[in-house]
Image 1 (tube, rainbow, N blue to C red):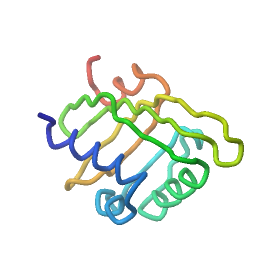
Image 2: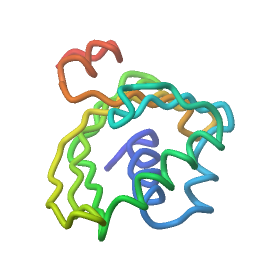
Image 3: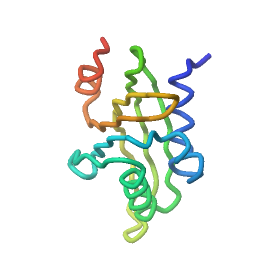
Image 4: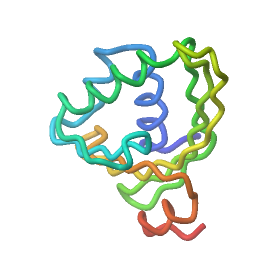
Amino acid sequence: MPGPNEDLVRRWAWAFVNDTDAFLELTHPEIEWAPWEENNTVFHGLEGAMQIRDEWLASFDAPQIEIEEVLEHGDEVVSTVHITGRGKGSGAAVDVRLYTHSRLRDGKAVYMFEYVDRAEALKAAGIDG
């Protein structure tokens, strides 16, 4: 049975693709998010989170996000995220795995840093992997 952090991470990922209201509800107003696609430039607050989400969704046809693994250490969480879909303009297939280091506060995502290397994400979160 998943713990509360794992459940939150899975609901947040589902809402990212499927439900704007749920996404906003699960995202802390003080979120700091450093997406891989933006060279880990940090976006701040709900406005920044919505900018990332809107631009990402606009670039994909039928995107799918699957959380394959969740490792927790207190409020520090590392998730293996499998992303598939097709580029909206190019039609090119997308199949990538990212490792997201998250921090949770008040039942919401407050920090997200996306890595392409699992070991780096685990080290950043202080998790032995």
